[in-house]
Amino acid sequence: MSNDLQNTALSRFFDFYKNDIEAEVIDSKNVVISFPVHFSGFHRVEMTVTEVNPNLYILSDGAKTLDELRLAGYGMTSRFKKRLETISKAAHIRVVQDNLVSESDLENLGSSIQRFIEAAKTIGDAYLVQRVTVSRDVYLTNQVREFLTAQQVPYQRKHSLQGKLEQHTIDFYFPPNGVPGLALTVMPNPSRMVAEAWAFKSFDIKQVNERTQVGVVFDDEDAGNSSKSILQGIADVAIPGSDIPALQQSLRSIGILKKTS
Image 1 (tube, rainbow, N blue to C red):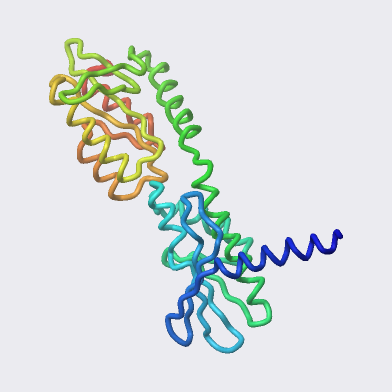
Image 2: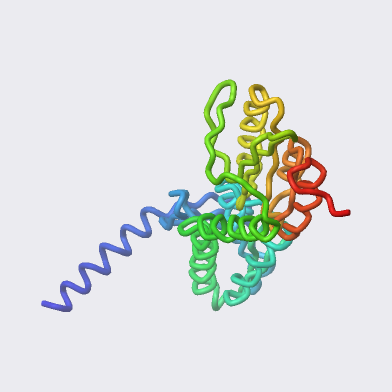
């Protein structure tokens, strides 16, 4: 009975897997295979198998994995790609121009394909399932708070500031008091979408609060060039998280922090 159950379960699983796999022949040397295995964004894992010669095959994800991460808001910085390469190395996968790439001989092609699928999903899910935004947010915010406390700068935390269109919560607020005020935002995950939303927020604040400047402390390790351009182009104060002490000079320039004699 147990053997019958085993055979039934395996047979049904193999039938399902075989029927749910989709393949598209590109030409005599290339085929794209879509597997019933999904990233956390519910997109299927796909790969291209290319025959170089009868005993050498190239496996590639066609940049689909990194595309998933881009859609999730990650900037494709050199540091970020190095992290991916570290994860990929164990599965004998390289990152080449945003593509995950691996090689296989004919004898090991089946196991190589399975290993590639598992690695692509692991890489994607490592960032999509449990993102580090919250912990990074706390870390970066604490860094700013500790710096301001050491400088003995009075500020308000999580202050609500009315804009022309909306009300906004500010991470660190320095009200105008004989000098311009400052609405300072901490940005741990400066994707382009987040940077654009912050630009709108900043514009809205300044429409009503003419004596208040806008500033941002952003995680420059994972910020793409487009995000940096937006932040640095809009902000009165733009401080990279790797150089929080640079905030001191900005606060002195505004007048919030007294200049040393």
